[in-house]
Length: 165
Image (cartoon, rainbow, N blue to C red; front, side, top):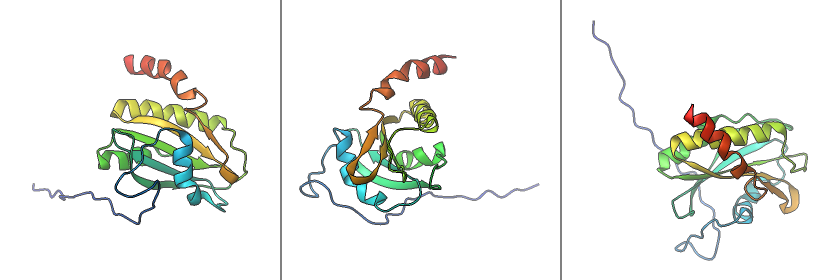
């Protein structure tokens, strides 16, 4: 019996560009949550549904690309972990920042947001891709940063325990 297996190549398709910082040649490093919020805030302007974006960063914390990974409803959005990490893997980059909006304008994380953050950290650790932050974006520049609030560091002990077992 002879079988047939397709040979495939996976490519990313550039859909556009955004400018940030002072010039294109000297891409700025993302050093604080406000940097990535300023760069991506227009993506969420007027949105009536939750949307999840991933900003992929190189080893020097410079943004390489941003991709929309999920669109949900007014009050929730399913985060598929494979989609979260796909662009980072294809870009060969070691860092990501996940961003999503809350159309309700409250940036306070839900229990689902907290669980999703822990899962992203866990999977990222196994893949060698660091979740640098998970940011919830609200209206008028408001945001909640899991990194700034110290939540990401608190989850490390649980991740290490799970990886050891």
